Image (cartoon, rainbow, N blue to C red; front, side):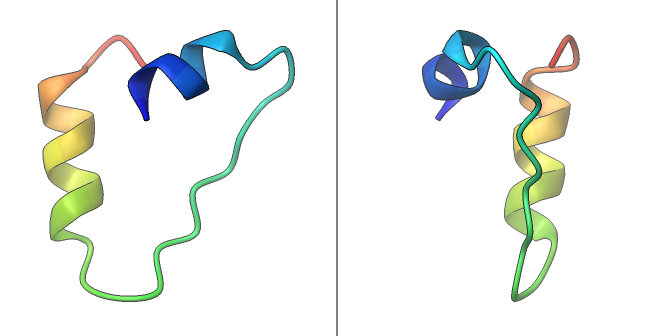
Length: 33
């Protein structure tokens, strides 16, 4: 997922439809995103 986000030429919006735990862990692991 990290590579996909970094390779995108346009902004990407993440739309979680469940608990935000996975999004929080992703953001914590990659603070520069």
